[in-house]
Length: 254
Image 1 (cartoon, one colour):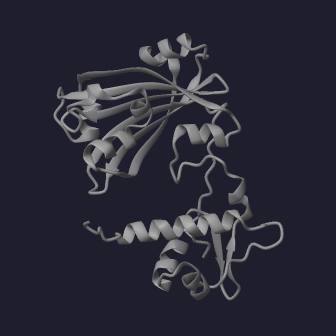
Image 2 (cartoon, helix red, strand yellow):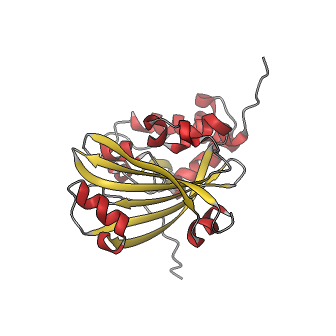
Image 3 (cartoon, one colour):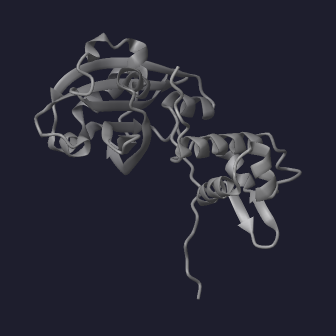
C-alpha cells in the first residue's frame, strides 16, 4: 500500500480544526485565555512554528486576540457568529446554523456555451461548452438561495451520470471523479434585484419567493494547484441567511 505524505497545508489545517474544536468546548463566560504556544505545541504534537502560523490565521480572522505581555485570548464575540464569509461552508450548514431545517431542490443540469464572464472565470475560450447545475436551497421550506455552478465540460465529460446527491455539492463529485480538491475561492460581492435576471425571477416565482434584492456572490473556486475549477453564482436572501464577519482593523493612529 502506497503511503501518501501529509502536506504541510493539511497539517496546518488539521491543527487549526483541532484548536477550533478546543475553543468550542471552552466556557468563554469563565475563561478566554488560551495556553501558551509551547503548551499548545505539546497538546497537538506539532512544532511551535505550526502553532504560531495557526494562531496568526485565527488572529487575522478575529477569532483570537493577542495582548502583549498577557497572552492569547479567544474573542467571545466570534462564538456567536453562525454564518460568515470566511471560512466557507456548505449552504445546508449555513441554513442549519441560522436555525432552520435545510432542504435542496435540483432544478436542472445542462450544458451551454460559456459566456464571456464564465470563460474569463474558468480560463477557457468563450463559447466552449460548460456544465451548468442550478439548484435552490430552502430554510424551513422558504426559498433562501439559488445557486448556479459552472464547470468546464472537459473536466467532467461523463457528467450525465451525476445523481441528485452529486449535484447537491459538485465539490465532492469533482473530487471523486478527478481527485481535485477545492481549496479556496475568490468572491466578488454584489446586490441584484431578482427581476433583473429572467432565470432567477422565474425560479423565485415558481418556488413561492418574493421579488426582492438578493446578495450575489460570484465565486471562482480553485483546486489544490490553484487552477480555476468551478465558477459559482450564489443568490442569497439575507432576510433568512445573515452573514457576519469579524474584521481586523489596519489603521495608523500616529
